[in-house]
Amino acid sequence: MKIAVIGAGIVGICTAYELALDGHAVSVFERHAAVAEEASFACAGHQSASLAHPLAFPAWPQASRLRALLQPSGIALGRGTTLAELRWLGGWKMRSLGFVERFSAAQKLVAYSLERQQALATQASLAFEQAQGPLLLLRSEAALQAYQPTLAALAELGVVAKVLSPEEARKLEPALGAELALHAAVCFPNDGIGNCRQFAHALKDRAVDLGVAFHFATPVTALSHNPHTTVHTANQAPQSFEQVVVCAAGGAAALLAQGANAVPLTRVWSYSLSAQIREPLNAPRSAVIDGHSQLGISRLGARIRVSGGAELGGTPHGRPEASTRALYLALQSHFPGAADFSRSMQLWKGASLFSPDALPLLGKSAQPGIWLNLGHGHSGWSMACGAARLLANQIAGRPSDVDATLVQPTRFKT
Ligand SMILES: Cc1cc2nc3c(=O)[nH]c(=O)nc-3n(C[C@H](O)[C@H](O)[C@H](O)COP(=O)(O)OP(=O)(O)OC[C@H]3O[C@@H](n4cnc5c(N)ncnc54)[C@H](O)[C@@H]3O)c2cc1C
Image (cartoon, rainbow, N blue to C red; front, side, top):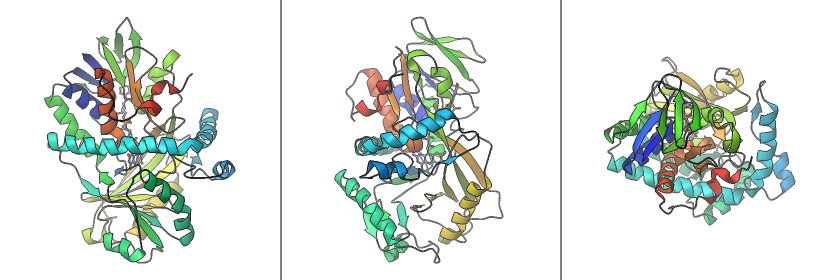
C-alpha cells in the first residue's frame, strides 16, 4: 500500500520503518529539516514503565479517592495556562484512579517495545548509547514506606524491582554524591536507558535503505478525503495515499481538529540539561531518578543529562529560572565533579503530549484511512518500537501481539 507518515520524531521513524519492513511504499512528511527535532530531541532516555512516572499515573497507588485528589500533581501552572488545560488537569486526576488497569497496559506495551527495539537493533545493526538498570533513590524511611504499595503492585505485574540499602546502591553507582542523604534505592534491572535521538537517526538511515521517501522541511497543512486521503503541504503538490498515519505529536491537534478525529491532547513541558562528562569516574554508570525531586540523571555516552519538571501553559522558549537552577543543583549534588561546566551545556525544553488517561492513541481513527500513533506522554521513547509494530500489524490486519483495547483512539468520543 501507499502510506504517508506525518512526523519524523521517534514514533514516526519507528512507524515508517515497520511499515517499510512490511513491504509498503512509505513517505514521511516532517516540518523540520531533520528527524527528532521536537519532543524526541533530548529526552532523559529511560525506557521503563516500572518507574511509574507520577505524571502519567498521579494516583499511583492511592487507596483513597480523596487522597488522590488532594495529592499535589507536581505540575506547575505557567502564566499561559488555559482553561482547557486546567480542565484536563482536573479530569486527569479523576481518571488516574483507574490506574492499575492503565498502568498494566502501559507496562505491557513498554515491555513489548523493549523486545522489539532489541530485535530491530540486532536485525538492522543499530549502534546507540544504552545502559541497563536505573535506580530510584529514596531519601527517607517515609519515602520507602510510601513506595511499598507501588512495589507490591509492580510485583503483581511481574516487574523485577529490588530494594537496596544505601551501601548496595552505592556499589552500583559509586559516584553518587557522598553528601546525598540516601535511605534506600530500588533497582529495576530489566529497564533500560538509551539515546532516543541517536536511535532515531540510525533507524532513519535504515528506513532510507528500505526505500522510505523522506520529505523534510515539508509542513503538512491539511488532510482531505476523496476517497483516499490527500496530504496537503506548504511547499509541495498534494499527494494521495491509501493510508495516512499521524505521528505528529504536538502538531497533530491542528490536523485532527475537525470532526470525528478531534482528540483532547495536552502538552506538558519539561526540561533537560546535558553536559560533557569531565571525569568518567564521577559520572553515573547508568541512571538514577530522585524520588523526592522526580529529576532523573542519566549517562548517555560521553555526556551526562539531568531532566525533569512539568509545566502546563508553557511555550517552547520560556525557561523559568527555578526549573533550570534545580537541574544544575541536581547535577552537582548527585554526581559532583562529573559535569564539565566549563564547556557549552545544552539546556533544552520539550513538550510531552498527554491524552486524558495518559495512554497513547494508537490505531484506527474515526476517519477512514487515518491512523494515529501519538500521545505517549512521558513514555514515547519507551513505547515507540512496540507502538509502531502494533500499528503496522493492525494496518496489515494481523492479530495484535499485545492487547490494544485500552489505547484505541476512538475511546474518547468527542
Ligand atoms: C524533558 C523530557 C524528558 C523525557 N524523558 C523521557 C524518557 O526518559 N523516556 C521516555 O520514554 N520518554 C521521555 N520523554 C517523552 C518522549 O520524549 C516523547 O514521548 C517522545 O519523544 C514523543 O515522540 P513523538 O515522535 O511522538 O513526538 P516528536 O518527537 O515531537 O515528533 C513529532 C514530529 O512531528 C512533526 N510534525 C508535527 N506537526 C507536523 C506537521 N503538520 N507537518 C509535518 N511534521 C509535523 C514535528 O516536527 C516532530 O518532528 C521525555 C520528554 C521530555 C520533554
